[in-house]
Length: 132
Image (cartoon, rainbow, N blue to C red; front, side, top):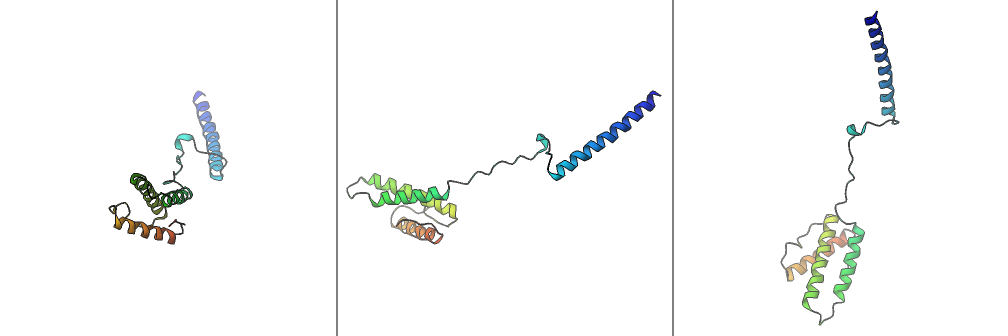
C-alpha cells in the first residue's frame, strides 16, 4: 500500500507540474511572463559612437567665428591652437557623416589648407552648414 501511495503521489505531482509548466509557457509565449533573470539575455544600451552632430556643428560654428576674429597682432600660438581645434572638429564631423578625408594625415601648410577647404565643401555637400 505504501508503494501505491508513492506512485499515486508521483502521478499527481507529474500532472500538477505539467499543467503548471504548460501555463507558464503559455504566459511566456503570450507576453505576460518573463524568463528568470539568469536566463534572460542582457541588452546593453548601445552607446553612441561620439557626440551628437548638433554639438559638433555648434562647435564648428563657434570655432570658425573665433578663427575669423583673431586680430592681426595676436600670438601665433593662439591662431594655431584655434586652427588645430577647428581641424579636430572637422575630422569629427567627417567621421559622423562618413565623409572621406585626409586632414589628419596632411602636414601643416598649404596642402593642409587645401584639404581643409575640400573637407568643408564635402561636409557642405553632405548637408552640414560649415562656416567659411
